[in-house]
Amino acid sequence: MARVALVTGGTRGIGEAICVGLKAAGFTVAANYVGSDDRAKAFTERTGIKAWKWNVADHQATLDNVAAIEAELGPVDVVVNNAGITRDGTLLKMTFEAWKEVIDVNLGGCFNLAKATFPGMRQRGWGRIVNIGSINGQAGQYGQVNYAAAKSGIHGFTKALAQEGAKFGVTVNAIAPGYIDTDMVAAVPPDVLEKIVAKIPVGRLGNAGEIARAVVFLCSEDAGFITGSTMSVNGGQHMY
Ligand code: CAA
Image 1 (tube, helix red, strand yellow):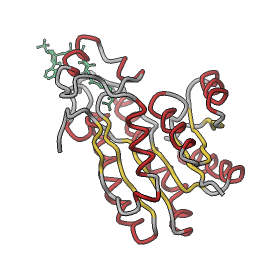
Image 2 (tube, protein in one colour):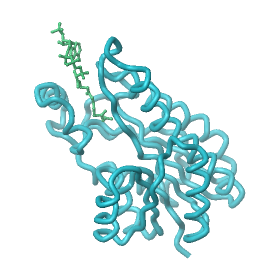
Image 3 (cartoon, rainbow, N blue to C red):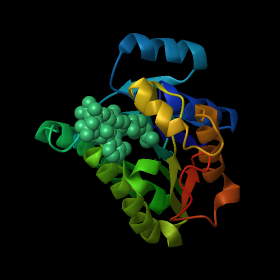
């Protein structure tokens, strides 16, 4: 039977590309979303992948929805923590709400999904967790103390949980995307984005498929010896 993979923030952008990539690799895929129902419906029509609506920052809602997905599709063996938001602004302008929301969704979501799925993976002796970090969690970014802290936290979370999963066949890795051609990056002011792209050695933004293919590899049998790693997919913008 096909393994079940759950992708948070899965109905658009990088998340949609990951869902499509995992489905093509033979997984039964469940997508999570929190925003527009119409967009999620269109995603399901496009891809044949069902989507469940809840906020990954909500601990109980995560436990309840993962239980519902498992009742319908079977045990979740793969989780891709992709759901992420930005609330950019310099520290002087950043509100406490903008700080907390980003930490709760981007980092809290990883904890909530792991609490819902890691015990089962450990018990069954196989699992894959891939957390979507960011170049801005590795290098920092002006105007993003909330986002950089959350993404940097994801990289630490990954290395710690990898140690707990290793002897039970559960690998935990992170991808650190650079600037990818998505709605999130399109929201960066054009003059700021132009300067950022000028610093990417490959000379362009990345595309969602380039992240998805890296995720699919980390979820495969072939990647069983890779755990606790961070794969940078950033066109050479930050080498580390
Ligand atoms: N380094 C140093 N100084 C900088 C700077 C930088 N990178 N960027 C701006 N500044 C300076 C400006 O020169 C300006 O200085 P003066 O006042 O002396 O002229 C001052 O900071 C204010 O700059 P802004 O006018 O840009 O300030 P703002 O408040 O209007 O906007 C901002 C600030 C919202 C952070 C805006 O600069 C911005 O959106 N930056 C982009 C942030 C970014 O890259 N976000 C990534 C989103 S995509 C993503 O996060 C996905 C991923 O994982 C990669």
